Each structure stands twice: as C-alpha cells, then as structure tokens.
Image 1: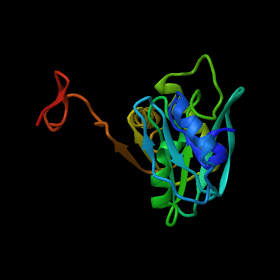
Image 2 (image 1 turned 135 degrees about the horizontal axis):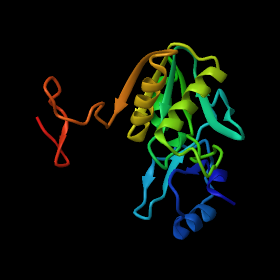
Image 3 (image 1 turned 90 degrees about the vertical axis):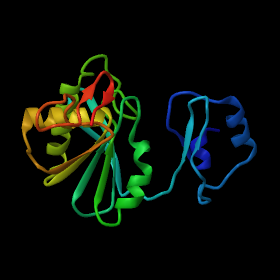
Image 4 (image 1 turned 180 degrees about the vertical axis):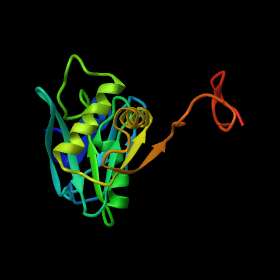
Length: 195
C-alpha cells in the first residue's frame, strides 16, 4: 500500500516510517477530508479529491515532458512552483480559483512527475519550457503566478519573450528587483529588505 491509496500524496522528498505504518493501520476513505500535516521529518501529506478536469504531459523539448493538471474553465492561471516542489504545492489555490478560472499547475523539468533530465536546469531553460508549454496547449491571455524560483522563471520568460501570450504576472514571495536604487526602495541590502 502507499499513501495515495488513502487519498494522500507526498509533497516533499522523504518518508516517515511511523506515519506510513499509521496509514496502513487506519485505512481512510479518500472521500473524508483531511487537514494538511507538516511533519518535522520533511513530509507533508495533502488531501486529494477527484476534481482534475485534465492532466497529462506536454513535450517541451527532445524527450522532455512536463506534467500538468488543469482545473476549471475561464482565463488561464498558470502556477509555477518553487525549487524542489511540484504541482501539489498549489492545491489550496486550485480550490480557491477553479470556480472562476482555468487553473493550471505544472511540474518544472526534473520536478514532480515531469521528465528527470541531467541538463537544462537553469532559469533560462525553465523560461523556454514555459514558452513551449503555452504554445503546445495554445494558451492565450495567461496570468503567470510564480512562487520563489517560479518568479525568477517568470522574469526570464519576460526577458526572452516579452509579454507573448500573457495577460499579467504575479510574483509571490520574491521581489521583482533586488537592488535598492532611486525609484525602487524595496531592494536588498546586506540580506535584509530596506525601507
């Protein structure tokens, strides 16, 4: 048995033997909602619900396939996760926005269910992967939403392709510019934000 049999998924790398044994002994129905639990050992279980409208893989390069999930209908919101995470980190946002928007989450190359590659792990390549992804799914007027390194991927996309097929961008938890200069007072100085 594995956690997905109980309506749970691993969100971070690692296993916790005691939690695994508990899951085996307490066979839970996936219909019963469960609160997210963060364990000090680095494992996070997230509840699953059968609401995925579409999921699959998109080839963005020779032998490189990005896994994605799409929920709801409307203007597309594409969520780009932080380093070493996956589509699963956006589960609460999927539920919050899927009633009004088409919420798309993807795993960057080397992450989650996407192809594991030895090369191409640069922000510049991730930006190109996003461009190929948008083109393959014929997405227009997309709002890109990035968290942590996801914001750097969006910045690289904008640098390489401008606003091609985009309606807007959202940066979560990272400044769009890191240096304090005239006209921008939110830069970094000695590792801290300066007012």
